[in-house]
Image (tube, rainbow, N blue to C red):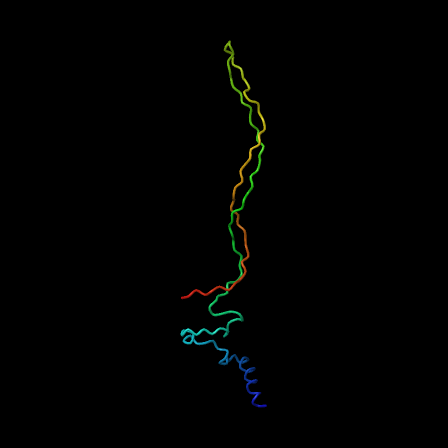
Length: 128
């Protein structure tokens, strides 16, 4: 019974005192330099020492948006001209009457900016 209580007592007492046991310590840098990679020591579940967490953020995205063409009604002014009759008197002659005309404006692209949420993700750590 005493043989079971000692390890149980140590497993409860050591974390309370802030002392790490051998199993909780991360591998030394000399150990990691020799190509042995140990994951799980002090790293969140599912994470690896070879990856970095990028938190979610808003990003401003600039993208082209098609603006459809439109039709516009425009008044065309009448056209007049000054002429002389056989006696040399000036008089005004209407060459073309005024009228409404429809002008079609072509569609075009405009760049618009909008905020887009990019969720957090794991990305590989750059070597070096």
